[in-house]
Image 1 (cartoon, protein in one colour):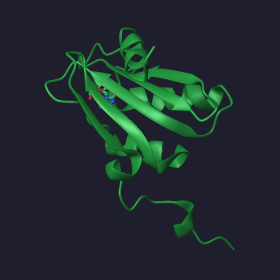
Image 2 (cartoon, protein in one colour):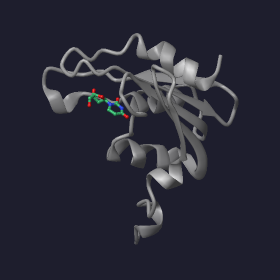
Image 3 (spheres, rainbow, N blue to C red):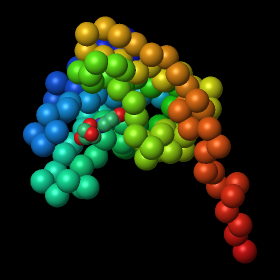
Image 4 (cartoon, rainbow, N blue to C red):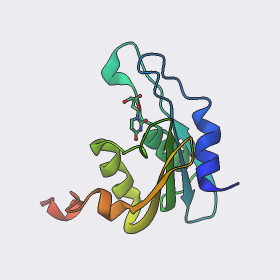
Length: 130
Ligand code: THU
């Protein structure tokens, strides 16, 4: 199964009763396993979590810490764009050159990278520790 198909598969189980915008994400870890996540909304709107965050949580829970590739899919006119918070989350676990495929359920795709999604990422290099 391709990474986009893994994202398409988990999207079916997304819980998005408030926005009706279901998103699926799949992450290939550098160890070779695929980790899936979907958005999970909440009646207290800010408590919802994005598909990418779910896939990252699944990756960490499985004991992997480095992203090799990402795919995200939604039923949208143009390929879904990860939110700012998810761009930061992806950059925590993947190198700037890591491929990210943004897809629509009707077959459009846009290929980008973690670095292109978030240039000038905030890293621990900015943090001074005493
Ligand atoms: N959403 C994601 O899960 N990932 C994205 O890349 C874009 C947006 C979710 C958040 C919310 O549940 C719904 O889509 C509408 O914003």
